[in-house]
Length: 79
Length: 141
Image (cartoon, rainbow over all chains, first blue to last red):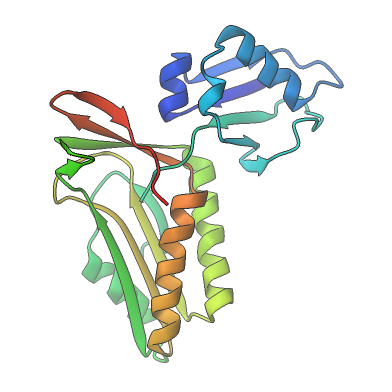
């Protein structure tokens, strides 16, 4: 199972805080982003940062592992 | 003694944070601090409240890494970072950063660096609640 987490402005657009997808060996980060985008086309336009297991990643061809936790995040505005 | 890096709902005491820093070393010659607090006006609008949300586990890990990097980069003796994640009103405390060093230059530089890095790297978002509706804040440089 792959968990995808949403926070703040992205969660508002997706209207949920978490989605889950079945893990398929060989699947990439891009595959998951594509699945989210198909369900919520407007949400990805404000995604600026992506984390896998709490570490920022840029390579969308990254291979995923079962039980990975992905976060699709808008620009940060803390402080 | 409280953890040097924290995300919490409740308010913090600057005096308690500074006392904790001073207790950590007697070689400290200067402590620079930054206190971020809530404004009642933003982008031409009255702001009633500000609501914060965080990716808690990643935010805390990033803040801890940030502190360690600051200590190494500026040769600090100690540092503390506390960020509230809750809903605040005008004047309320939001974030506290302190850098302790042997001399003032390193303390000032590190304090500025830590708040700048926090805004860039730590997954926290703020929503301004106004009489005309709510809006997520677009980050400033």
